[in-house]
Image (cartoon, rainbow, N blue to C red):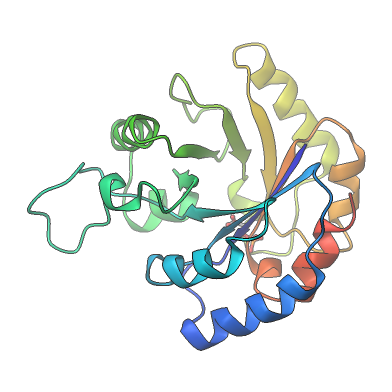
Length: 215
Ligand code: PGA
């Protein structure tokens, strides 16, 4: 089974999300060995959920979640409000680490909260120095210099990272960073990479579909 996670980041409004879905869902793959996870901004989670609900291999993910469980935290999006809505949550994305100074202790809190509410964390690491919390089952390796730069990490180096992690962790191992329909095949063909986390190329439904279809 291979994951294809679309990380829309802080892009798209309601109209654009609907256009994306209308296009993508017309050519949705029925292949059960593919698991598509769409991660729109929080404000678009519900409309996306409504449209994907009849597709058994398309899931919904949050791009982050609050460190607080519930309560008087104006503006926060907590696991409690996300539970029953999303299946996955990206935690520890390098943009959260960089722009919002998120450190391991905070990421650990978020991971544990997600688990508590049956939301599967997709835990992002930038290199082997980034710790992975216990119980994490899906790890996305996203080297800093590969994100949004057009310089995807060579497959051999990605596989080396998987080998290292495998010594300590039993995980599904994903790669992310400047993926597109031309370079994604190599990762998928390697057989050892359990899926892809796709940013820029997921914003266009036909490009994202082409990548999913490479399997
Ligand atoms: P990118 O982003 O595909 O645009 O490089 C990947 C990510 O940040 O998850």
